[in-house]
Image (tube, rainbow, N blue to C red; front, side, top):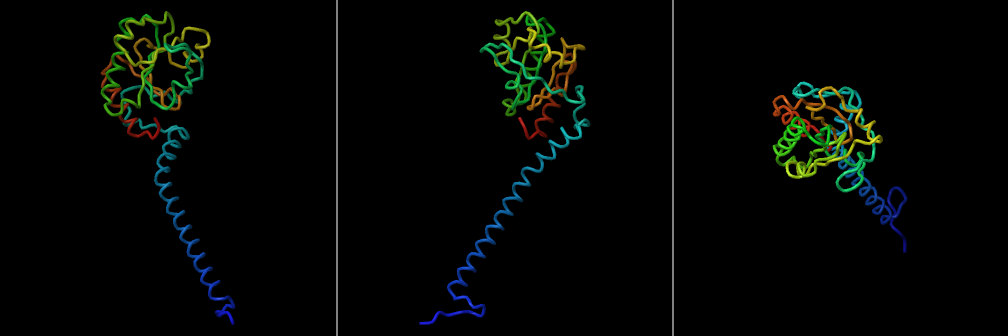
Length: 218
């Protein structure tokens, strides 16, 4: 019994198998191109945002005009500080979320209490974006008035930054008008903005809303 052969000399069954394999290969290649295109559509805005923000130092200054932009942004050092639940690393605290930070004496005078109030009300006003922002109090001395902070600022992270290991961290925060200043740290641990809590606090909220809307991190 003879086997049917085509013009190319291959049996018909082999030709059919080769055709099916070529068709399957083309389909896989087309699927991979589709997946690649979809991935590019998703990842390209993130890549551009990172390049603009961290590569060339671009900031949306036209829209962030209520606070002072710190240029360049300051990478906060990783140090281990004592918190209410034991020792915590700033590399963990300043990661994955945006942070509103106050730096001051742990006894918390009236300027301190007002700044913490602005931080709390700003976070509450973010509504569904609240979980993307945390509040942090770095106590530089006399840490801390636990009763006051527990009563008025539940949910805030309080860290004792009075010891020598914390001094490099504290020096990263500008000292001018620090008792009335609220700092903003991005989800990668970069200190990027500062606000005077004595000014209209709505400015902090408006700028933070813009940052959260533009950000693909945190």
